[in-house]
Amino acid sequence: MSATQARAQMVEEAWSADGLHGTIATPAAHTRGPAVLIIAGSGPTDRNGNGPQLAPGAPRLETNTYRLIAADLAANGILSLRYDKRGIGESRAAAVREEDITFDKSVGDVVTALRSLSARPDVSSLVIAGHSEGAMLALAAAARFPVAGVILLASPGRTYLALMREQLKGKLPPDLDARANEILDRLAAGKAVADVPPPLAALFRPSMQPFLISIGNFDPAATLAQLKAPALIVHAGRDLQVAQADFDALRAARSDTQTLLLPEANHVLKVSPADIAGNVALYSNPAAPLDPALMPALIAFVRSLAR
Image (cartoon, rainbow, N blue to C red; front, top):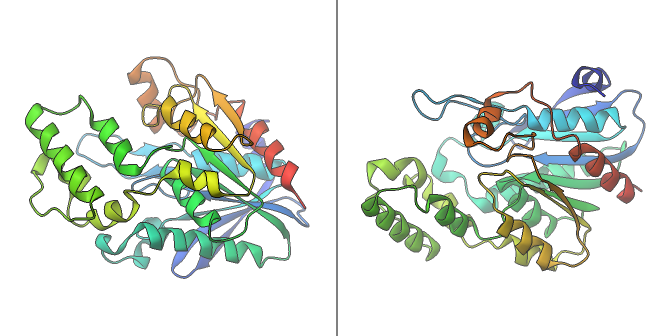
């Protein structure tokens, strides 16, 4: 089914709760069935998988990944909710200061959205689909609120700060590399850092540190091991941000998880060329379709849990 056909079978309505704003995508002629809560990834990524220009000369993040997922779910009779995280997009006013955004508050927002969905008479069961950092939020929320299942899309399998350390490895001059690792060590110990070098400010600015400290030692694999809800782990073979080691750690945490490997997909779940430039170009191509193997697996998983 084409993206245009899928959108034609989707009715979108505004959603809001506790200062958060989002979109409910309802299948045409919907009566009652399962619902999927889609949680966005890191940074200023909005409900659709898009975001602002992060640096002069850098392209905008324009993937439409989450809207494409919602459209395909709706085309297959499955309702979904996706929302702008606190401080982002239409939910910007829900967090006046960046330092007020913590992992715990973000998990609380996921629970707020789950409660809202569970109160709808047309929702029979709940599934959380978290992407990247959103997968960590999904795992933490599933430990607080009962759900029928959890979908982990390009999810870290290590702590957030360990993943940051890995992503920075070999990408900084020696002096900055040493300073970045010192900062990561302090954040992991729960200590703020005041003297952040300007080249590292985008990652470690003081206003961002409360979030980094609060999420820093959250272990997604250990949390998954404790969950009882069925889980589907999706890994993209050409992901430049989440490694095979993360997928392996999650898969090893629970032997009963379902897994899906998309060998040619990148972090935004679209079929990518092998070269880095072509991979990154897909972050600014909203028209590029999702990997064709993704949605059949997601739909089958959600339907298997339907009540």
